Length: 257
Image (tube, rainbow, N blue to C red; front, side, top):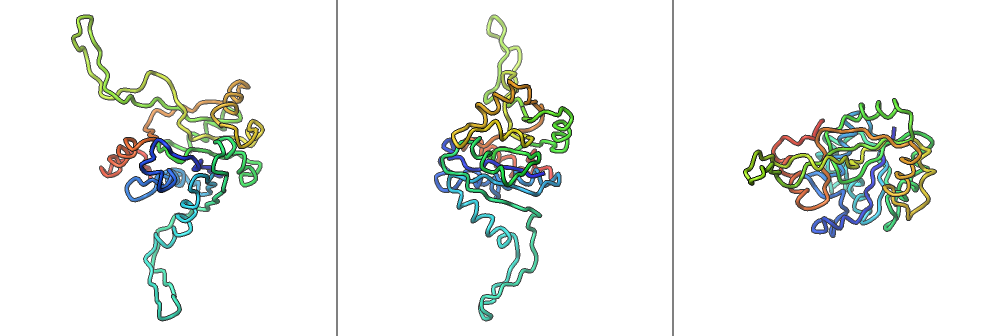
């Protein structure tokens, strides 16, 4: 099954980084967050990727064009017409298709544009800026069990601030550091979709999270897979720094490989 990754947005909320590179190339540790996302899927044996490019998409093309070189020990023998000798490498077993889906195309439009690369088969889809300790096998089993057109992973994100439980006279009964949010479940990406969902997308101006998902829900064709574990998007520099702290601690929850 192919994995489609949306990697074409402007990343305006993390412009400190995205003015130089596309958001999926912003690094956590010494690797782009896109690499971390792909490693999650690869851990479960899914190595066939379609990446939807847009803003500064050439940067992602250059990253993969030089990936094997960067992951190898190599000798450049300039005495013999620039002969290159690869000594060893740790490159991933990935098949990566990079598709220019337009600079200003919306998320739904990007999905529509990769239809020919997916073919008439189910596929997985996620955003190029969020990681989780999600079990992909369980997600797929759940999708297959209900027989509907689409599954979206949902989660309850942590609050940004500590919560106080106060008595009527303002004594603090309890304190909880960054509890779960207000009880709402949010879209965490990590979709599984049947090819019929392309019929719900009009064109480039279509936002996936608007008409397509709303209409799928109206038709009873969108089911939620509840993920109670770790999930963290990288929307801002604060989010990036948080993910860096996890990674540098050696205890990154999404590092399941």
